[in-house]
Length: 243
Image (cartoon, rainbow, N blue to C red; front, side, top):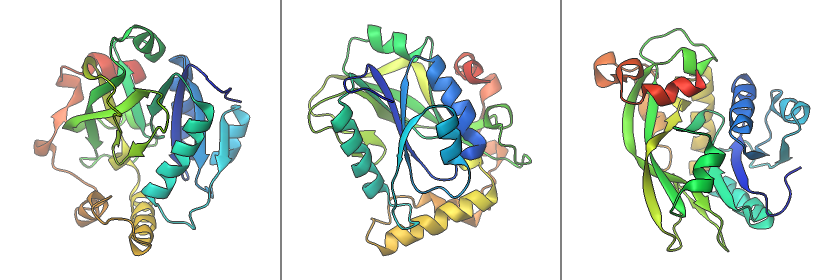
């Protein structure tokens, strides 16, 4: 179990992430982090994998809707109970990668919140494989995101970022946030869209998750010419750390 005041806490909410979960657990533990998962009532064996790996978690029911605000509020509640020194906000398909172990980065960094460039990996027609890092190599660069922060009283997640509360924030040049969410199977993408549509019906702002509908229009297949190849990229040395 995660103890109150733990040093580095990776927190995520998950729904049916069994194909990706073991690699995620192994990666973040090798980086010196404690793990906490909010299991959004998965119907696969996500919960059993968490139990088998002694990952701290609890079940949280949103009525089968992918309601980001409700999930983030529940994550805030957990974080404010544990009060870790550092919080790393992640997902089963999202990897924070640095030039050294995450625990070492957080021990040495001179600011209180870390931004990193986000790389969104995409399917350009590859046959689906749950081994995301060794199957999908094409990405689009997204803006820097702040997903790592020292804990502060009243800690709060907001959309794709952690709120600042006036803490010193800086871009960590030798790090990336690698997001493989768009590489999952078409079945998973459609299921996620339907769960997000249910959340929209419940009042979630439709701007939150509109990219799911854009993905549907192209069946989640992207043009190679729209992307960069990580194997030819300045970020190759980082992505190689999870391959």
